[in-house]
Image (tube, rainbow, N blue to C red; front, side, top):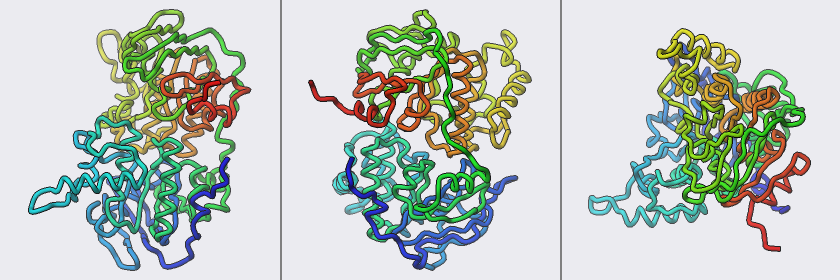
Amino acid sequence: MSNRQTPAQDRMQPAAASPLLEAKNLTKEYPGVTALDQVNFELRPGEVHVVFGENGAGKSTLISILAGANQPTAGEIFLRGEAQHLHSVHDARENGISAVFQEFSLIPQMTVEENLFLGGEPTRRGFIDKDRIRREARAILDELGFNLNPRQRVDHLTRAEQQMVEIAKAFRSDLSVLILDEPTASLTSHETDHLFELIAQLTKRGVGIVYITHRMAEIRRIGDRITVMRDGRYVDTVDAGSTSEDDLVRLMTGRVVGSIFPELDLGEPGRQVLQVKDLTTVGDTVRAASVEVRAGEIVGMAGLVGSGKSELLQACFGAIQIESGSVQLNGADITGKPPRHSIRAGFLYLPADRRKEGLMMMRSVRENVSLASLDIAPFSNGLWMDRSGEARAVSSLAERLNLSPPRIERAVDHFSGGNQQKAMLARSLTRSYDLIVFDEPTVGVDVGTRASIYEFIVELAKQGTAIVLISSDLPEILHLTSRAYVFYRGRIQAELSAGQLTEENVLAHFFEREAA
């Protein structure tokens, strides 16, 4: 283990100097909702100031106003002591404020370099200077250590690579304030380390960082101060180094939350539910993989982004084409069957990217929850949809999962990330499933929602459902699974039993092993 200091230790701690950026009594009202209620916030030069709170606490509204993407109903913003009226994102960038939002703002049909300079293209003799764009794009990507081709179209990139492009956009101009909203959600540990080194370099130059994360380890590693929000209101600002995790959760939720991971106590697994033999996908994203999952157990799939852990279960579900091998569910061959067949056979896959793959963002909670069960009661009565039965069932599930607000006719896009995740999870309760795959189920959700999701998964396993948990979050694999498979470049490197699930053992198989 390296003795290298973390970025927060590398730099001098920011003194209690005049604020670089300050918000006073910021209020944002929508019809019937107060998203921000007289919130105060200050950012000092050279500090990483973490904004912490549950989903729906007002964090995203606050940073959208600071970044110029939204305008407050009331309140003021000051930059270096001078009042600012940030009418747009472009206006904020002109003042040295750049943001990397959790939801990407890229144009898929354009290249990496075109996205980096979109809206600020350099010109020469009245024409866009493409050579300069290419040179400067390459320089930015090299500075950040991102191995991307500037000429590659964004829609051909993985989600992790698209995250890199979003981060690179913020470095296009001179920075005074950098706002990062869950920037590591799709990055590998190596890419995260490099991002944190860049943050350390920026803070040494006096750049202030506003940082949103739900990961306690990141707060400890790079944070200086933490502002806690709850229900659109300011709660407190505390020191990141001396405030305990329990205190943070208490401030965030207004209640004491115990250990985030529930006790498993699953007992002996039952019958074999899923059996995969020598599966290889078209394109070799998975090669000769064999796994089995039994009733009442939680099986982890670990590995770096792109290792094949998600692609294996997508292929089993029917979302990726299989070249060779076999998949059996409850003893029946489902190799190559479409997702519709898998669902009706008792197999549900909940994807990692809820916005692009898991939910219809412009449709209601009701429609999203019932999506996989429109062929059965109470959602239909044969040939026809049963609207009243559907509404009653979804309302009951919304109450069970504590959807906030419990408005099932509201479009999913109008809910916080944690509540969007609850809407997708509710789908697993609309019919009887023998096997449920949760792919990165806690990405972008707060600690309280994360604990609820863990309890939800464990309860399903205790009821006899076979669970597969695909996760890039190592603590989830260590604390929430009965055993785990570790992937590397499409192959299974190891299968680890509960007694072998340690950080060292898992990480030892994340990379290529030397020949004996």
